[in-house]
Length: 254
Image (cartoon, rainbow, N blue to C red; front, side, top):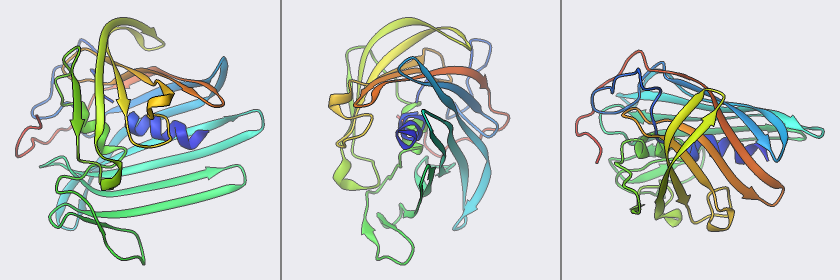
């Protein structure tokens, strides 16, 4: 269950503004120091807390990258987990350079590590041969940051062939409606979207997932609801901290 929650915050997790008081940042609406926290519920039960943040910039193979960290910690009915995803996103081009997952769950500890090479359109796991990728790759986490730059017109469906594992493409984002939503962080005018990925996870067509994104310049994910076999999954924004440092891209995303 918690691994699904991490995916939510990571592909989730995706588009909208820190608050009406914050000014848009140049090039992209995010940067170092940005941090969002969430209350997580499974049905009526509190299941823990989640967060997504850009902690710093690192150098990956000579390229400057944002380090984005997504975490869910908690549990329900004897089940406990502390799960994290990290993505290194090229600050100049907003493509993925590295992606890791660490799922620490009751009775399990699963780790994944991917180095992603946009210039050669391949990715690689440790001690395994390179695999074909795409020319402008995005992982589960960096896709959220990319989608935050998309205009999101009501009634339109956006399709992207940019997921770093080609067999999961295309990723589709359907823009459903506008709606006012109240969460612990406050009341937001939001755009509601339905993400769809070729998978059995939270964003499959059967899950009927909907995400509320604040309708401002610096978009953040305000709320998420989805139907899962174990019950209704809900995320609610608790706090939002704007970035303290941003770096312009070479070419602003579409």
